[in-house]
Amino acid sequence: MTAIPKITYTSANADLDLFHRWFDEALDRVRADVGKFYPIYIGDRAVVLPRNALVDTSPIEKSLILGKFSAATAENVPAAVEAARRAQKSWERGGWKERVRVLRRAATLIRESKFDLAALMSIEVGKNRLESMGDAEEAADLIDYYCTQTEQADGFRKEMARMTPHERNEDVLRPYGVFTCIAPFNFPLALSAGMSSAALVGGNTVVYKPAEDTPWTGLRLYEIYRDAGVPSGVFNYLSGRGMEVGDALWQHDGIDGVVFTGSKRVGMRIFNGLSGRWVKPCLMELGGKNSTIVTSNADLDAAAEGVMRSAFGLQNQKCSATSRVYVDRTVAAPFLERLLERTREIRMGDPTQRDVWFGPVINPAAVARFERAVSQTMSEGEVLLGGSRLSGPVFSKGHFVAPTIARLPLQSSLFFEELFVPFLAIGEVSGLDEAIAETNLADFGLTAGIFSSDPAEVARFFDDVEAGLCYANKRSGATTGAWPGAQPFCGWKGSGSTGKGGCGPYYVQQFLREQCRTVVDPATAPGDPQRSPERAV
Ligand code: NAD
Image (cartoon, rainbow, N blue to C red):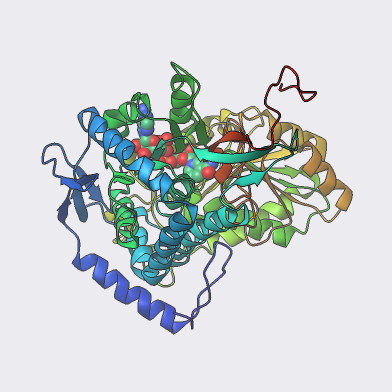
């Protein structure tokens, strides 16, 4: 494996024959394994639910059944929560060093099987080779990063000041208990591993549900944790449909907290409903409607490249994707000319193939959202490129739509609604102030980008834009490509509740609660506090 450099989301290519040979071999292994039936896993039990199974198909080829997955319902939740509760104390008491050891082993197993994991995600999600390898590498790096945070904080124990010479004060971060962990489809390994490993390293146990479109990748994560030595009951796997099992997963009384990545619609439902008897931690990373600003001082070639990559990478199905551009009117024509030219060069097709960059969207609902946006554009603005489904022998097998660029009036709702399909809205503005104001009008505040060669403009953008992850002049992706330890991923406003994002240095603490421990030494302490000059507070 050492011969191949690490692939991240900003890797432009992997022109290594060895990479592609190993990827092809992994694809063969995944294809040879399709069509099986899978259980859910509660504690050490595999539970087969034959009725109403989830049929996992590839978005590249709708008729390809990757597997059938037991669909958990509300009836299965109490047993999963009970298993997680039973396992929690011994997982916590085993100590952070043991948890770090086991989780680092999981990161190693991910790296050892990264070609198989990437090939699986390429087929299950419709990611190209680099994107799917990035997902696998990020998953391993996230686990390691959260382990490192725990080590550097000495397991989150800290000696505190003494109020008298006779007492010792220690501050300890302790796990809440059982976390429900609910994942989206678009980074099915990295986000599932990131959320769950942060909970686990802190000593929590987890009831995990992958998205309905990606149960197979979720199952692989369960198997990796198991093979790494995570004890039974510590990580429970419930595949299932959000509308059938979702509410029960966070409404169960035995859940101590929820970590969720997904849409604002579902996240707000959980956030508003979670805390009943007392307040519970609710870690939400939600959607985006990310803007890139192109000012009159921009390098237009870099801007066109950066916008094209962020708008159409993974078919815009990244929470960080650029989905709207505010371009200064004075440079709109030359910028659009370059953007259209770069977008026309995109290689579309079956993304498991070596030279393909742009694949399908995830499911028929995404195709319907795309078609609705195009038809709204017809009445409000102008489709500059794309605007239809793709047709032809490869495309008719899957959920393929064309990369689409639309010029719209600034009032259009298409600037504010997250679509999560390859549809880019372009608005013309009369300067940086208007561009920032339009950016901030959206409910969302996840990522934002600017192209400007004027440092004063860049500084103003950073100060005034309402977004947690901001980039200036990033040609490799105007608003995308965040990596653990480099770019903390924190959604503001409707994009998240945490204020301390995944990939960042403060993430693990959010799965822990503080306990202060004061111990008075009876051998040296004065016996009667009434007569002692040191009065206890
Ligand atoms: P989604 O909200 O439709 O589904 C996410 C998960 O929630 C799935 O597992 C789904 O089954 C489950 N779910 C559905 N209803 C539920 C309920 N009532 N209770 C509990 N769980 C329920 O999102 P998606 O389509 O899978 O993913 C795309 C969304 O995720 C986009 O909005 C994207 O921006 C967002 N996202 C955000 C980040 C981030 O870090 N901020 C990262 C990736 C994706």
